[in-house]
Image 1 (cartoon, one colour):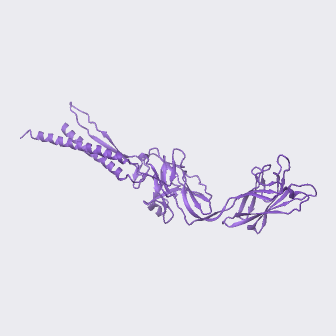
Image 2 (cartoon, rainbow, N blue to C red; image 1 turned 90 degrees about the vertical axis):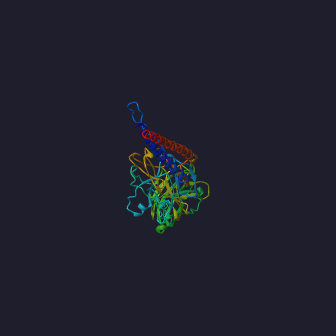
Image 3 (cartoon, rainbow, N blue to C red; image 1 turned 120 degrees about the vertical axis):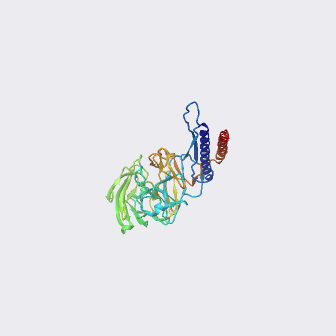
Length: 433
């Protein structure tokens, strides 16, 4: 019985070390594979209760585990959509074959890095056929709330490189100085005109004609102007008319004292804006707050448009796409505007090492890994997303070669045990001749 148990222990030792060598071989073979997670082998002794004063060898068992939470170093690349996760969390991806079916039932896979480039349909895809998944943004660039405990809201990140886009002007700020001398009784009352370009809903250039007409009194100074705004898209129709009165006190001289609405949207003294309805919809025009010199002023004898600013842009072509640290996918256009089109979340699990490993450094959740949750990158326990970067293999080749030497010696020693048991059994057989 004791001799037989020695033989079994030797055989178990051979099998265990062969399994460890397989893990070492896998690690070394993938030492240059981006995102590869190292396999670790752990030996466990088997104990068989002794009886009658004899001891029976139990042998050894081996368990192999992929260390998914062990990260490799990051290396810089030249591709903006080469992505790597720095810290905790994983990128959601899907098989391109499943995305191509278009049935919306693509299985979510997880990975920590990938070199994504647009394919023929504009999907951000790796050479191994993994499509990046994310939440689509609204037309205004905001990302609506999506469920965080399910992948149902995720869609393949699709980039339309031939996309044209323009943004209508919805807000404008006028910083203009009106000459104080023009409201004196000696003035001729010449109107002051200003033309401001804006963009309509189709990205076409339109014009607001802004006219300032001084009120000339019989004597003294009125410090009053009539502001008239006309829209070229409405055939020059008046969209707003306001009476402006300026302060001439020592403390607040030259600032707005009051704004009276004649027609158009009302003036909001809290932020100094008024709303007018141009052909494409409402537009907020900031003329400054009462008592502040942050918009329209009336000083000296010079008409000076000091600062005219507005949002919106003409139609432009998409030039590039980048992913920021929070997972927001930004599209850049040649007109200088940037639009958020997707958000890529990071997926976190209680036990990443409990996931099931698949090809191409991808993993799927399992009962051992626990339930997953989709976080904004950089929020909660997750790290951030690094673009222009890849994660290298977590394999330490020097350590693996050292383990290989130990494994080879252990394998040889177990083989020697089997050889010794064989010789002892042979001696037992030779007792009767």
